[in-house]
Image 1 (tube, rainbow, N blue to C red):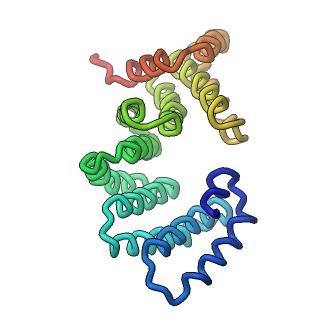
Image 2 (image 1 turned 180 degrees about the vertical axis):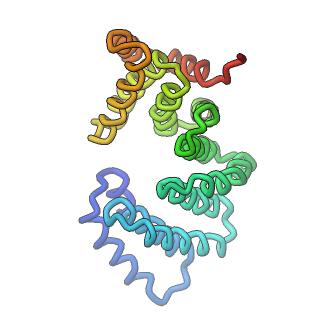
Length: 246
């Protein structure tokens, strides 16, 4: 119940009492699967709601240690991924990349394509943090391809959202504007309204693109992006993310 409420509502006020009850029910028991799931969920709430990344990291480390006891490779992979995201969120981008490289190989071996897509997306974010824009665009393209072939709309939404920033820095302003407009429409159609931070991201892309081609051209590209169908948006994204042969 706590997981459903957190994923659907991000309502920490309802989730935290349920987690406290879970702690009480698990006290004195040797149940690493349930204990790991509980620790991981509390880590997410601690990071987002309580804004305590160090405490969240300790909880993710506890969850990973418990999952390793079970021998479940998929669960261990999830724990490693959670720590990579924690690294990236704290600006430890090189550390995140070092954790993600073997994680992608393991996910491919396990045919865990959702995790492959997510890991490439986080790699792209880490590379953006290092201002390695070309590599970031390539990572987002890998994420898009894995999500399109094997996963679903949620896994597509994140690299679609993140790629335009890299493209704008790579001096592909019209492509960046089109994809940002499409990504905003795609998210709202599938997952609900954008937040304040999301709208700030869009304004930054429009401003960066506008410096390069002017506000009128950006507005035209934005309208074109809002009208794209998903296959056309993916074709545009993957084409724009390819390394420039020059």
